[in-house]
Amino acid sequence: MLSAEQIRCYHEDGFIVVPGVVAPDTIAALRSATERIVADAALVDRHDAVYDLEPGHTRAAPRVRRIKNPERVDPQFAALARHGGITGCLQQLWEQRGVRFDISKLNMKSAGFGSPVEWHQDWAFYPHTNDDLAAVGVMLDDIDDDNGPMQVVPGSHLGPVFDHHAGGEFCGAIDAKTPGLRLQDARACVGAAGSITIHHVRAIHGSAPNHSGRPRRFLLLQYRCADAWPLITPPANWESWTAALVAGTETLTPRTRAVPVRLPYPAARNQGSIYENQSALRNRYF
Image 1 (cartoon, rainbow, N blue to C red):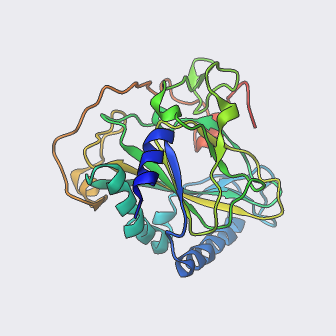
Image 2 (cartoon, rainbow, N blue to C red):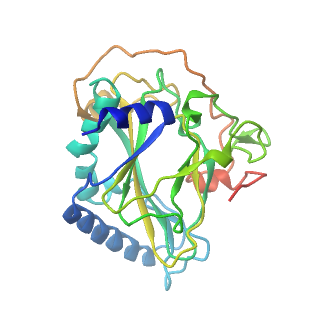
C-alpha cells in the first residue's frame, strides 16, 4: 500500500512510481501471453479490434505498437485489472471510494523502432463529472531513460486543459509550440518490471521512441472513481457498468466538481487509436 509521502507526491505532482506491486511470476505469465498475441499479428495486414500496427508491419515480420483491450483477449490481463495491490492504491488516493475499471491497452515499444506518443492529457478524451480518474501503468519490462519511458510534467494536473485540436478537429495531442506546457520539467517514469505508475487523468504526459536494443512493454489500465460519471460516452448498459466495479461500493449519486472541460469534438479525422489521432498534429515534439 501507499505511504503518506507517496500519497502527498501523487496529489502534488500528479503521478507516482510504485515498485514491486506485481509479482515476478505474474509478470512472466503476462509476458508470455503478450508474445502469443503478438505472434498472431502474422495473420493480419492492417489495424483491427486487437492490433494497432507499426509502420512497416508485414506478416513475415510482425510489428505491433499496441494491443487493444488485452483484457478481452487473454484472461490474465482481465485478472490483473482486479489486482488488489492496484485497486488498493487507488482507493487510498480516492479517500476509500469505489474503483471502476474502464479499458486497457498494452503499448509496445519494440527495440529500435517503438513509436512515440505525443504530449497529451487523458482528460481531453473522456471528461467526467469529477477528475478522480487515473491510468495505472504496469511495467512488463525494466524501463529506463533509453527505452522510451512515459514522461509526465509534474503539477500539470492542477493546471488548464490544453487544446488537443489540429485544423479545428480533435487530434488527441497538444501542439508542442503551445505556451505554458513546461515540457522542460517533464520527469521520466522508470523502474523494474513489476513496478507500476499511477498518473492523474489531467497530467500532461508522452513518450519518446525506443532507441535502445531492448523492448518496452507497458500495460495501461484505466480506472475511474465509482462516483465519476462520463460526460461523453454513457454506459452501454447498467449490468456492464456495475460489473466493472473492482473495489468498494456502487453509487447512484455522481459527484460533481468544478473542473475544466474541453470536449473532443469535432471528432478526430484519423480514427483507430491515439497514434492515428495524433497523426494530424502539426508541430510534433518527439
